[in-house]
Image 1 (cartoon, rainbow, N blue to C red):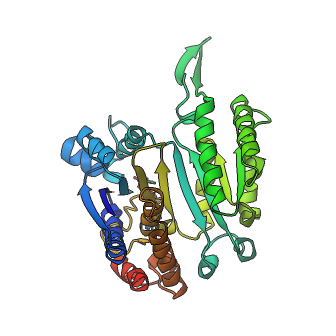
Image 2 (image 1 turned 180 degrees about the vertical axis):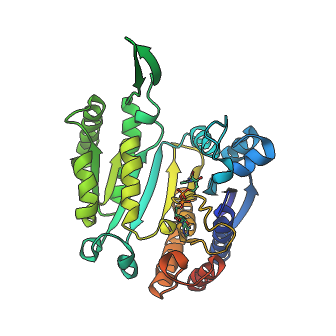
Image 3 (image 1 turned 135 degrees about the vertical axis):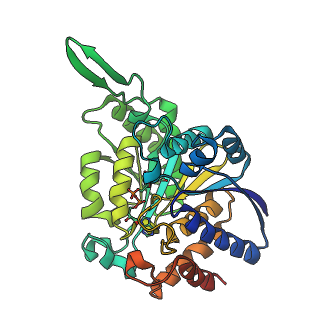
Length: 353
Ligand code: NAD
């Protein structure tokens, strides 16, 4: 197949890890007889420096015209001025909004050889294979009204947690669809004992569960879920939840894997290109040293192949090659090893051939 891909390397270690991901894409193209073409754009601090805006209309249009977008990371101390009118993270939010990606997928697997890197006890980590799906464009972060006012001589701040039925339905349906290709279990996380929006969430999820009897559904309160993620993570298959709950739970879940550098993510909408990126930031403390772990970005390539290009086998090749490299004790510095970013990729590519 032929596919047009957009690259947004971004700031800090972003360009270092995206360059390695492109090597993997090219190896997959060679092995599978595909042709991938690449356009490259600026996002975040590098775009602020060049154009005075963290995301330009032209870059957004280029992203919308691509079949999928691979991003590195944005941000860094250079652009940290809290008083600035534009910041790197703003560009990322505008990109997500512009692409209408309403579901953020974060798979968390614990590699058997890496259990000692997790702060959670090894016996709890066996068999952990979780897909967290966070609703990304609604809920508490986007509800209206929000803001501050002086009321009765007191300063008051308001945020609103609101959901329309269709916003819940589309992300929960995606969770059921993806659970069917996995262990067939959805854990829907809410706070239905307190929040009306959660009661609507639970009602719609229950309806969808009734229409999908081949997938088992459990409801879990968010406080219970936060405990379950560290006390019995192997019991969870697909976890789907509201935007802020998901923001918090995805970070908690990522700790299970042992290093930020290992985990990929995908942000998907109903149509249009998906956005793929490692979960880590621009890591300014190690940028430019060639020691960043490229695995999170390379596994994001696997998600891109699977979810945007429908290349399931090719996605499996990449994941199996990463597994094999980690099993052979290939490690970057964050996992106690000595391999540089390109050397780690060499090891993965050697196992892809
Ligand atoms: P970070 O993820 O960049 O780094 C946290 C720690 O993990 C650092 O010690 C770093 O060296 C290490 N680390 C991260 N990725 C690694 C990798 N691939 N290999 C080896 N070690 C890795 O988080 P931070 O330090 O809180 O943030 C730095 C900058 O990144 C900030 O400007 C922040 O706003 C931005 N950020 C961007 C994104 C994004 O682009 N999606 C996400 C989070 C943070």
